[in-house]
Length: 150
Length: 132
Image (cartoon, rainbow over all chains, first blue to last red):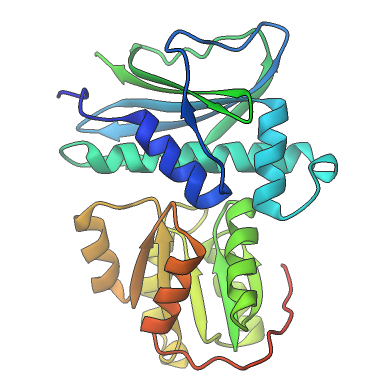
């Protein structure tokens, strides 16, 4: 199944604008988070006629800003649990919008979230088929789509 | 007017609750369909329930089917708010008994528009609610 028509950049921009009121601007395509930055990654898996995963990666600082906007609170007051919930929901929305563009019958998993420094996300048997990078308030947002090949 | 927001994401519950409070609902929220059924059994029907589809324990579609099978909840308006945006899923939800359907990401104006479509008469003064 072809996946080249899915524009992660556009999907991400629409979600961040609608839910957070934040503007995502395209960034350098090969940009990645520095190894000393704490990165929060939300992952949703897609199963069915298309199998793979969608990830959303943001710095802990931007995740905190997004969380404060979603909860209507001060960034200094948000909890780790709230940050995890927020990034998971952003991944859920991104994955759901990707799924709606896939042909066939697919199911979306509940999101999972990982936080840490200098790590990579691997989905067993899957490879990256789409990657979009965006900039929001000077911080990097990386969205990827990984397809299981077997 | 009372609304129950059912979504496993606390963040989404917070946003939806704020939107509904701004138009005059007293809001309550729970994290899955089973907790929602328990809440309704304890507190009685609400005027409006916003229901996510993908939730642990009991998903939104199953919740809607159970609610629609109970005459005590016949007057409740059910608005599904979900990332499930395939037309087949939308039809499935409406056939199960959802009154309206909104896709994530949503905006405040979309939710307000859906509430208007459902014909719920709201008070002039917004009121507070609670969180479960």
